[in-house]
Amino acid sequence: TQLLEQSPQFLSIQEGENLTVYCNSSSVFSSLQWYRQEPGEGPVLLVTVVTGGEVKKLKRLTFQFGDARKDSSLHITAAQTGDTGLYLCAGGLSGGSNYKLTFGKGTLLTVNP
Amino acid sequence: NAGVTQTPKFQVLKTGQSMTLQCAQDMNHEYMSWYRQDPGMGLRLIHYSVGAGITDQGEVPNGYNVSRSTTEDFPLRLLSAAPSQTSVYFCASTKGKTGVGYGYTFGSGTRLTVV
Image (cartoon, rainbow over the protein chains, first blue to last red):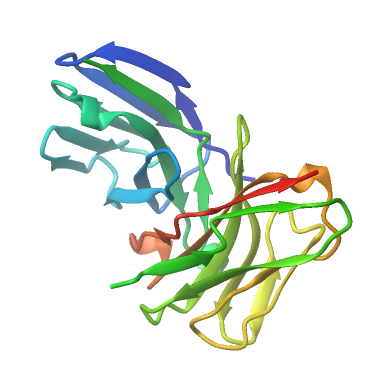
């Protein structure tokens, strides 16, 4: 069973601060995806990374896939109150499970004004 | 662009009652799945389908049934509701293989309380 561990579980910061959220596993994944979930809504896909060492930027958000494809990080620069939400990482596999995703338990981010 | 539509949004059931959670997508996605989300437990896969007529169990299938008669619809049936099934349920679909980077589109969820 592939597991994804996210840290920290909770994060509360002031507007304007930078932060990094981590997603780690002992297993290799073919892809790593990040979702954001707001209260009362379903998760929404932010980004997918598929190549070891890959870095993607989405405005103030920077996503990195580890060289060994076992870990990923999400860095937010100058956080805003609108960044508040639950951030979920999810790993995709190839082969027989190639439509499934394994989800981490999430990091609940609160950005205070 | 409706995406994935789940109904109802909220539901309260008595122990032992049965009900069906509806899920429909209009994106012609072959793969659909049901998750439950509980505090501290994350998203757990209940059942999934790789196409019409094909379903399989996820990690927490007990007490739930699914069927997939069309590409668009993937209902989840609770056979005899128990308080342990109190949760938020999400339906999701994807166009292609997650291993090459296709992501999921989620519905907005059904919050179920069993009393």
